[in-house]
Image 1 (cartoon, rainbow, N blue to C red):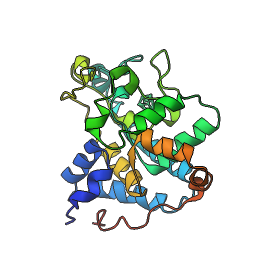
Image 2: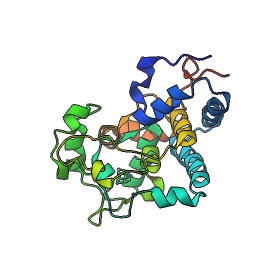
Image 3: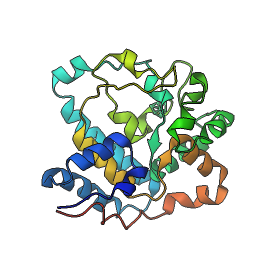
Image 4: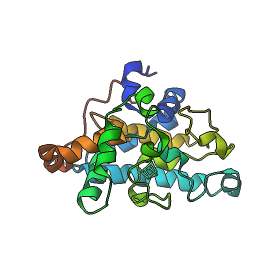
Length: 235
Ligand code: SF4
């Protein structure tokens, strides 16, 4: 039975890491993670790895949403951007994908990105940023995501089933929010993050990539990280 190494989860999104811990001895669930990891190890492009993970997540979510009761109880609505003001975790591969989109013409406020990136992985520093300046750089004036089809994994799995008022972090406080359980998708997210080296908050990873020319040019051909097996033990 695998015993997750606690420190290893620092670079993983909190909800997905919690799901992984919960199912760390569940053969069926661990297989989801390991299957995705095996596929990722064969994909040489960071952008294609990120898109593969997103496709797998979408497949799991589409199964969940086949149940009409799920749709009925979700509070999330187009134009609500509360979760786009929180600290979004992304993998290195997702950073490469977002950088490619920006370099390809998706417009972002670089000064805002630079300022947000100073918080790095610190939630304390992040929630000290005034609410309006904390909005994701991919959020447009209509409160819609400009990279929706390529949005990060964690943006895909946040579905609120409780009161949407609880999502607001305007006061700099994160309240407890009831979310739809997306366990299979979470196990897939863990694989996507385990295949990378330096996961972290969207602003700092993206800013570093856009600023660092050498990294930007070489990133898309980098191989996935290979030493994930101590954590993601085969069952
Ligand atoms: S990438 Fe899109 S969905 Fe995710 S936080 Fe930014 S604007 Fe919101």
